[in-house]
Length: 252
Length: 300
Image (cartoon, rainbow over all chains, first blue to last red; front, top):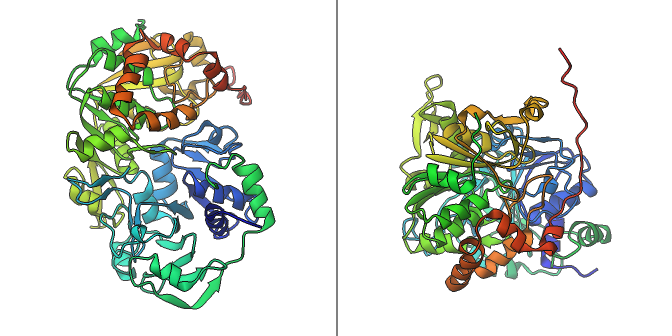
């Protein structure tokens, strides 16, 4: 079955979720991935939104992270201070999804500025919830198209921490979360090696290693156990197209 | 004693040039009508604080109301950038005081609790801390570990939209709660806007739902549809189409000024604005009821 790059990324991100995970969900593809996982292999996934919604069961695709459909039928609604303290800082969140304009070799993310902070060339939206999610969720996943400008060797600004300059530096900083576990792109999947450097661990069917290397801003190393991902299945694509994003806002 | 007055009176009496204003609401209950009233009354040099400036501050900055912005996510949620804010910040014309969401709401929690600051666990991402002198380190006196500290935020005026309130300002909110309660307690003055003004008995029938007590409220305004294009849970839907449309309008400064002329300066108040939106928009934003099961407080 034919599929788009967004569908490919969404399906592969969904497969990373485990049944019973408590997930801090973002809008867009992460939201689709979580809802897809809940309808397939992870029926007990608990979706948490930074607006303060716990156990959401959205009946429609929310455009914003604070859509009313997240509230109706949810398990609980609390203040933002509660969601960031009782749930995230306390260690009750298994998975966080992150995005950003730049992701570097050690999974650090820039969502703040391109160029110097005081005189930015491009002013980006900023952290939102991501600084703390990246630090305190047990596992973090990043979904992003594989483009050289998005994958510089070093980000202009560290909005949220990956492994800093290497795994030992993150460990020394004493943050509770495990850091980025995978970056899902439209070419394949990057995962941290024992030092926290992102290396190519999987390619999507039909993609060549050279494509991934050419679209990465550092000398991308390739795992000696490089895998090929499974194509999106018919049922996964049906759920995405018919149930989750019938007007094709995100998966076009 | 009734605190009921018009929104124009409340803004005129309680919002002054140079004030720090916090128009509350995380996506939900954003008091656009109050933002528009501040624009109509020509407020200047405001410090605008909100976790997510949203279109309300994009519009107020376009109208020349602000000199500084305190925020934690400066985007059009689910759409892209806030183009006006972005342009002003890139040009260095708007002062910036930036946090993560958690930093921002921790400032409010400290303000609301009467504390000078509150600590947070470190995140290992230090670039924002190094760019903002308000973000500092404190030593945990028990473990000796370093924590991150942010100072209390005390806005001069909080503007808070709610589903229902009585004339004394006892206010009930449901749906996404955001930072509404914390802002109300942190601010020096509170202007309340409400979809419905109800009898005190209605409030007393469900005390767990009361987020804001009347005695911290300065003014109560009856402003139906105050939040459009944001929404009020159970009353009307978020106008996502307008959030997408603003992305187009705000590509051109002329289009923005024309929009302000037509939809802010060109209408007397929020009711005229709502009427002007027309039946098609009203119908599109209608919400079917979904009632909670009643709870029994017991008759003691």
